[in-house]
Length: 110
Length: 113
Image (tube, rainbow over all chains, first blue to last red; front, side, top):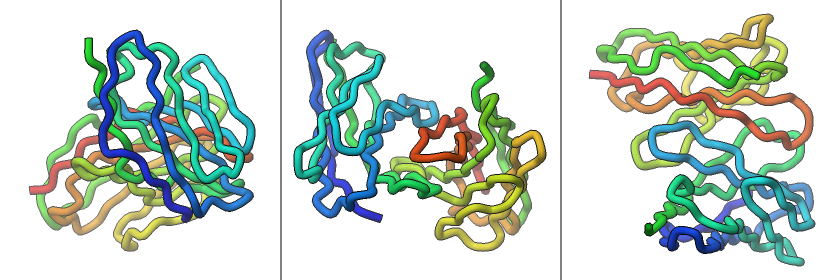
């Protein structure tokens, strides 16, 4: 499995945008970039995924670098409920599993 | 639409015993994956079931086994429990096509003493 690198922790102020980076320099052409988050005492929750183009959904935006070696998850207006561990995962088409790293622990400051 | 449910919520077992954990898939999903999450770590893939057969396995010994039923619900069985098996066990359901997202249940917290 291709490896991802994320900062261990980040802090952000409530109601401000948050940019969570992920490096994946060994990504292959068939790897999708997935983001999940895990709130305290809950199972992981799907956030967003993409292949080459930037993606938007109701939860977040995913900005993918042109060379695909890095990506950024953007929360447009952080709330206290967004405090969680965020995982960036590479998954090739048809792969049955998600390979989680240690993720980024996001703290939201009121 | 019903989400993924797991039972029991918590469980305490003694080393050497056997345990069965249960998972009900989200409506419309035909694939179930199981993960183990030790304290402070990310979830680790155990195996996946599709059409009642194992469809991929992580680095777990054979004493970890599973079943999927015709209604797509699933069981995880662990024999000869060890202290290191203490963890949160997560079940995730998905549709078996493409890089689809997996929907996780709340997990079963297993403590082995």
